Amino acid sequence: MQDLISGKRSLDDADLQGTTMDWLESKDYNHFKNLKDGTDVFSLVCKRGNKVYTTRKSIKMDEMIELLNNGNFDYPIGSSGQYRMTRVVFITVTFDEKQYTKEAVWASLRSTSIEDAEHTYGITNKFDANLSKYSANTENLCVKKLRRTDTLHHICS
Image 1 (cartoon, helix red, strand yellow):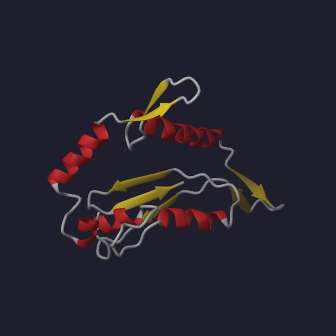
Image 2 (cartoon, rainbow, N blue to C red):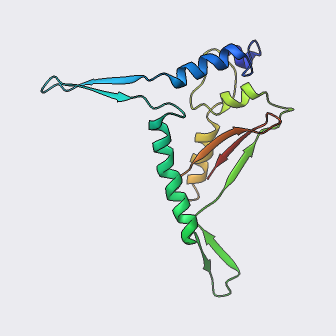
């Protein structure tokens, strides 16, 4: 990651993309041992895009789709009906490609710092923490994607 932040490497490097795809496609398991009877249990590791990850995200997405389909995500407040209270907010955070490299943006979405690298990190967690000051119960589903111009969009809802 330090090489990405410093500009020595790029997210566009073919070898880096190949290594990432090999890692994503590999089936890695956590090994647990039952201390009472000694049996072994193996659990597929959650990785972006695999079945475990997709199942977790699908549950959240299904809940949001149901909420939107029911149409029960906002309601009028006050007697005039002019104002509404909502339980769903869609937020798109876009990074200016003139100010940030793709690599710096990806690093900023991490929850932890990269050792010996100066960069911003934890913006998703900080944003969620600030949002929770105004709304006690928040759920979010974040989608990170690149536009055709390689600008990263971070979509939270």
